Image (tube, rainbow, N blue to C red; front, side):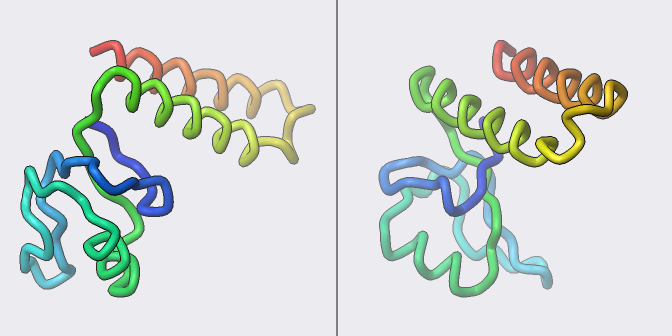
Length: 100
């Protein structure tokens, strides 16, 4: 299971968790196969991330994208050794979580 930005979600991915509205309603149920229409609707109503089931190839692609985004977010503080250590720790944690 991977939590990904809805911008990174692709048709054919399968939800690993229900997508919930703030009031507790289920917007889209676990095990739903995502379609372009579902992704568009969820995006329009403000959903920003999803939990998806991922095969090994998809998991590797998602991890690679997340690590690239992490590096980009820390770009402005790349000269601060404490913050670089934090970035590395977060990245290492994500890698370990993916290994299971």
